[in-house]
Image (cartoon, rainbow, N blue to C red; front, side):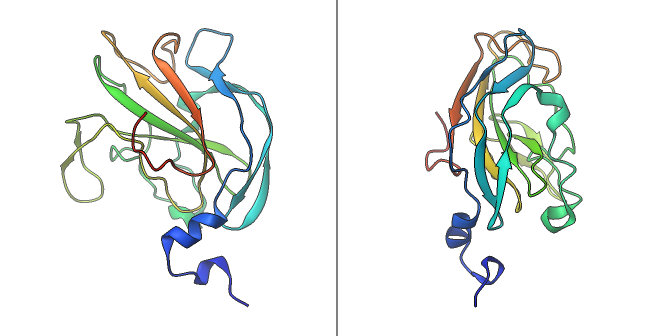
Length: 178
């Protein structure tokens, strides 16, 4: 019998990494960098069913997807080339993908902004304001778009009111922006 690991196509393997519900992500009642996702969902991570509990006041800065299990890449860095989050500059748009790993832990991948100097594993490139790819073993639950406007956005402290838009997803969307 074939297993998901033996499926050669990334597109086909995607079917083993899906969210089967809508979390209803929104800004938490506290006007800081916190998010509520008040509906529990079921997702598959590598073909394994995982129940994701409702999330109350997720602190963005505490969710950096740097502590993934070894099968996903223990040395995973964000698309920016960092292990943690950077402060998003004024007048930029960055997409944040919130997802779950097989242990049921919710984590976040912070994308890049147009023209950002990034150094992912041995080379320098320019970032792009699009929904970022996610590592193996990470199933997307929802995407947050932050358009910073005239001020910087610090994932640990800056209020999301007026700058954040959310989309619940089953897999990463076909469109790279919204």
